[in-house]
Length: 234
Image (cartoon, rainbow, N blue to C red):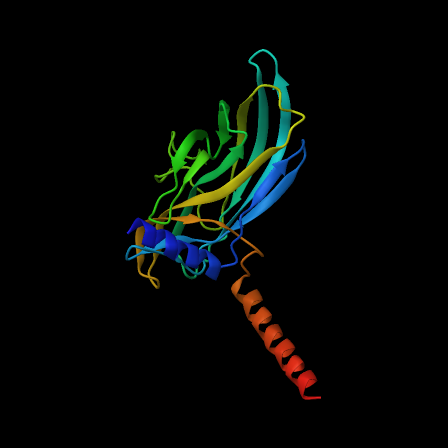
């Protein structure tokens, strides 16, 4: 059954514009934004559902070696925007942000502050489509697989400041972040029949268009298609 779910998840990810996001941290001031879809177990099958979206911006604020503890400290600000479509979803919160690092994190420096005030290592993002992330920034103590009072609601913005510690002086070496994911909690959509379930999000590209933008894109695609057919006929 686990193998079947993994195979289905692979098909789900191929059906959406998913990609393996990998970011190499090189210095202070670097920033990037990941756009996430939403995957929920529907009758035990991982399914990407419409309108469940979020974006997370990362910004590197510090990369220094602390000789007193013999570790390199990577500091980041994280901003979460819950862009879920409220016409489809009556409730959906983003309660955790996860990713892996290379080299591995030795320990969580001074933890985190802000709306997501906790950092834990080797946590499981939930649902049958879930996976383990090395670092999880969450609104609940040492948890990435449960709801949190500080989760970001639909249309709202949440933030955190995080410090991660790596063994030795690696300030001159690249630090790679990948395997990005987010955790949705307390999902409810009357039209989709989802009530109180968790979910996950993986990066997609390009950003998922708003309904109006999607309609314009669809019309544009029809126009381009018609033009191509006319060119072939000439």
